[in-house]
Length: 275
Image (tube, rainbow, N blue to C red):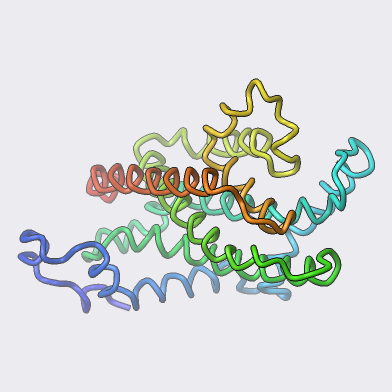
């Protein structure tokens, strides 16, 4: 697909009559094509195809359940249900941020050849990973409904909102990571260490109540802690989260997205040139 087919006039941008959402809508076919391409490229020549979307994190979950149920023994009822309630949300965060480091480099030739909103590159990666996450979370819901719940919690109706908050937060972080990775190549080497550190600092495989009360408020400065706590409350506990926690995570996600987008627009041109 040639993005130039959808290119608006320069004057429309200069006069501010073409806001970002209208630009993205105008290039929606390009966005769709990039999402489909990402999914096809990832699973081409693969016998199991999209099954790997669930199989890889499932194997990790199996190891974590074995370790923390039978060796370290975290005292929590139906630990497997607790773990899968939040782990796949974390896996989505990990995968999107990891791919953000190479977005400009992977699309360098396209970016230099013709104009299109560079936000499309970030959004296409986020949406392709979202498709994979939705497959995972549907399977998680089925497993929980069959083997864990004795009823259908009304709190599950909040799940689409949680997914949207998660997408907003991660997209904002992707904007920042994509830019910083081009400006400083060390990010590609440092990010795996940072993600691993956040995995242990975020209540993914342990409940937030295990964090000492003296440091618990500081732990929620971690943008992922509140989000994972929401997933555990909604999916594992089957209850409605507190308005305070829900509101703070929502505000956190919006602030991260706005800050990341501001950074992206500030250095977008430089990144296209040097990627």
